[in-house]
Image (cartoon, rainbow, N blue to C red):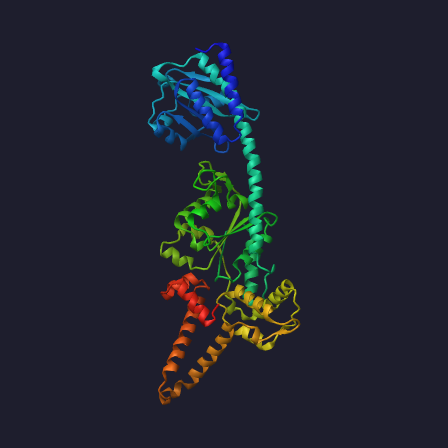
Length: 525
């Protein structure tokens, strides 16, 4: 039995130790371990009140049996149940000497853990905002009973613990706000680096008019949008346009390429992580879902998302919550999800590589962005815009584009779509002398060879009727024919896969390095 001086000294020391902890994840384990030791109990726990759900939960548990602690860590129960519920309701500390005989006993906890609760002490955690939870110790060791002095000590400790938890929560809110701002700034910086060099949709044909009509409808609604189209066709530009025209325009727009990150990094980027959650996690990191909260997150190449991540994304869409890696408590987020893909997602659903329930949530409002070869009427407008911005960036005066070069640009199939056209103009501006027009001599080899291939194809068609009268081909002719076939075949396969080299190489049955070598050899870059 502690005398008054020893009790006062103990309370003072523990209070100082508790208030010195600013992070709640470090505070609560210390509180519980100290309470269990001081009161000679088999187990101790802090139960916090979730006011939104009206539930009590265990953020951390200390018990002599690890299985019991693990089971409690995943448990929630209604806040009006059991001794803890009575303490929350009345605000009074309670001592129970025989749990079985107490009418307030809630057996659900023991059933969940397999623990037998014989006796306990429970004290409220009161702050200026009201009761935020309770602190409990259970089962005095060696079959003994807790005393009134033990209850008084726990009640006194509970006052300091409640203040410490409130301070830790305020600190966490301030830190979360700072981390959120830091994550948003980082996302915006990455966003600016990725941003296309033109800010408005460019095009005058019927397909572009239809896209703009759909974008206006999507912007006026919170409906989930799935943008479909080949790589480089301008899917992110469509997503940005929808965001800018929506009610969330003043909030962040965060773009994530799901195919650019491995599964482990993708989860950490999207959901964030706690310090120590994995090797290299030296500090807490807010996820991009939280950084985009209030605004829009754009998930590009959603068809490449692993199945495990698909299930976690579905939960975000259903519950509006994210749980950082290494953390058990979910966090609320309010954001709009716009996704994009260059794959046939319906076919992926049929192959069971993409969840059908996720597809139906993401694909409620599909928008197809046609490849550039299907809207050739927009090529002159795009080329002029790219010429102006590229010339300004190079600090060079370029008079324009010759008619023959325009014709060649309009006649090319552009497997890399708008992005490839932009790169072509950028290259031409770098080559053309100051004050001159861009001519055929400033265009890349692939455009010139495609035109030559087209002429040879026309010649073959014209000569097919008299093919039997042609002399036997030489070895040189066979070599040229094989080269022409390879160029045509590789170009077609690249176009079929939206310019994605990895996918095209897989379809061709060769390595990515081998395909890149052939592309360089044939001027297909």
